[in-house]
Image (cartoon, rainbow, N blue to C red; front, top):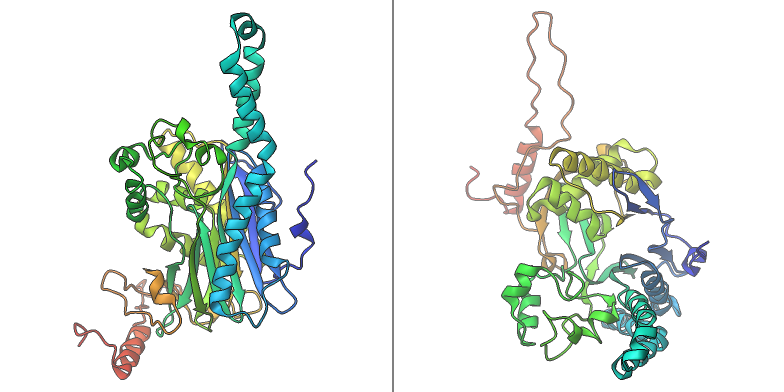
Length: 432
């Protein structure tokens, strides 16, 4: 019996839905009862959201999740805090959680050092008697010390959004532009060996980034940043491909973005584990389209699912079903026990707000850089490859008596947007 995390007793943000479980081989799921995410609301209306993707077991991830809530909510942010103070609070929270993780495993780290010393000093008789027990215990300790998590945290404070992350967990903000076109903005940075900035950092530590890029592994994990996993940090020299580094290659320093002003154009926020967006990328191809495709799945679930509380589960089940079918078609075996979490914070897109099919929002997600989302930043006009007809068009009318299909393509929305853009002076030159 797993004890409930103390975050379960905190007031929940009612405008949030979440689904979190382990995906099993064959498409079955094993629910984790939301133990690896939280969505809390403080008395002054601030909201804190977090998604934690475990590495090598759940214990460390649960510890990191609960400690993160402590650092951010005890005491909660004050309405008088400046933006820079909030950013510092997020940064310091990650530092404090990492420090608390190491302190929590201090005894185990000391025991590991003692056991390794004993192995080096045993004579032949003692080795035959004690070696297996010592090696078994060392393996058990290493299993615990390799536990950790990648993390994404989002804080809504004074009607502004702040985001911090380590690893490949993502935060996506879906907002409409002046033409009611929904755009997808990734607010986080993927800390992986596909990130050129991370490769530059590793090269400055003396590592061969070409070998790392080909291997796609740093010690015992694929990401370049995480919380926990002391084995690949304090004990990184034991790993051949990173042991020559002049300092710890895997770090816990978060990437922080914000403040991002939340206005009526902001429709919903998504926090998602890497296990979700990597599955979409694998089965549909093209990493550049993954966020767009995920947002589209969420929008369709908003439309089909009358109960907002079930939207996240609806989206995950659709992704899981498609992924299992993809694996079956291509004779692939899905990785067992993949943890997936999808958290959706409804800002202005469903539930008590107008349903999406009635609020005039057209779905045409465009991936933007995070710099366009800062306060005062405007959304650029989409490029030619990004413009498309609205999928919200009405159903095709029935044939007339002569079995001919009446025309039903309505270009009114297009002409309205052209007129609006011409009036605002933002009409592209290639449109007459």
